[in-house]
Image (cartoon, rainbow, N blue to C red):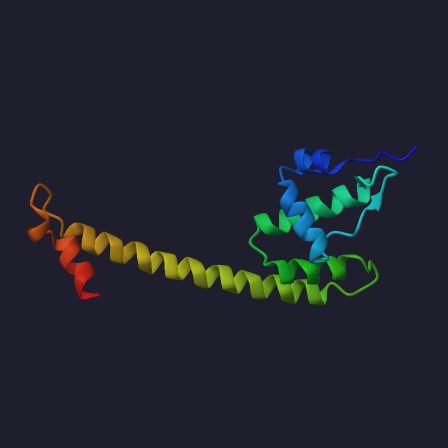
Length: 134
């Protein structure tokens, strides 16, 4: 007999909130599950595998639209990997741009933090002055 899961099982096995699983179903990232006689959602290993795929993509920072594209591409095992490679390269460029922005932010915070004399009053605080000038 095929292993089946209820939504709570899926949530626990993937560390995903039930509401998130329902949302993924609503937007089409997860296939619609069958319903039991009592109208409970009945999930299969395919659902578990898809949810793990979605979670791993989210962990890597892919957007929901990108995950939908990756999921569609992954369902056609004969499709060229070129599209997956392009999508991944685009995402990597976005991540690298965010890293550059965060490094600039860290440098700015270090710069204004270095102006702090500590122990002074707010009226003489160099950090507050720097923030007011922005």
